[in-house]
Length: 184
Image (cartoon, rainbow, N blue to C red; front, side, top):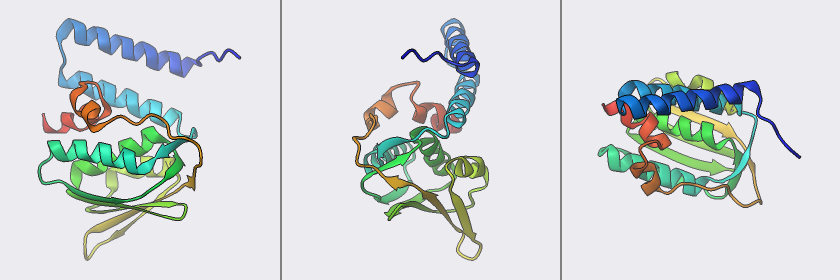
């Protein structure tokens, strides 16, 4: 069966081509990374209902090890184990946004829930949390936020997950597009 891209997917593809031609002509600049961020966000929100089987432990470890090598005072712990049906793009963007303003993140899985605990408020990530059908809590006394994302366990094989080296050394990886741009 032939699946044709819809107009929004064609539009995003043409935006990617425009940005790549601009990078070739002018070199990589901060404005290009901002445009690529917007394209990644639009793509993730457009496909917010598509779920993949993701090895959560491997995704979190690889992504946060890459972040901890860039941000020296960053600490994390991960007790989430197993494959879950979740939107990989949105979950990755959520973790990257949380790493921007928090230095200590703890992830856990209990039953059919992924629980993210961190210091600080989760003000800038509410659209991503709601797209993942999750919810968040904030305790004012201890300045701790809790994000709970409902998922279901998957028996299927996990989709491809990039290694921390791919996240670090690829100039156009999601870590370099979302996270490196913050420190420039």
